[in-house]
Image (cartoon, rainbow, N blue to C red):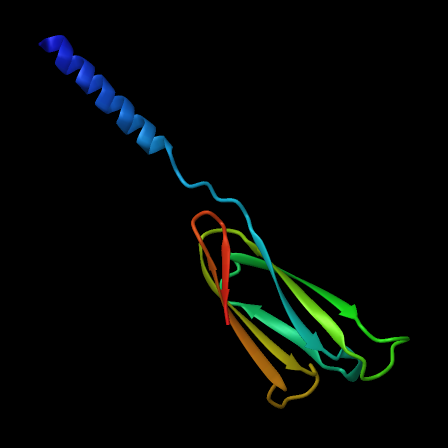
Length: 123
């Protein structure tokens, strides 16, 4: 009878040890946001991150016109990389940096990073 209880106890301890070792692993994820703009007229997108420990952002601008024609559009691409689980707000303002007026346009995104690192973007 004693050996039966002992075996049962060993099985329970092994199960508990295994369960404590299993965890969700974090794998960094990337998503992109694209915004049209016109930097040849002085307008650019500027962004602020509410929590830089949750996400990182890289900007890439591609000119879509020919021979730097004033007024030709560009595509602003922002690559968002998850750093840790949590939530951050990504706020964009489309403006000329030397002007003191309200931005011509604003955009705001809620970025949620799950425990496994996956990114969810809500506008």
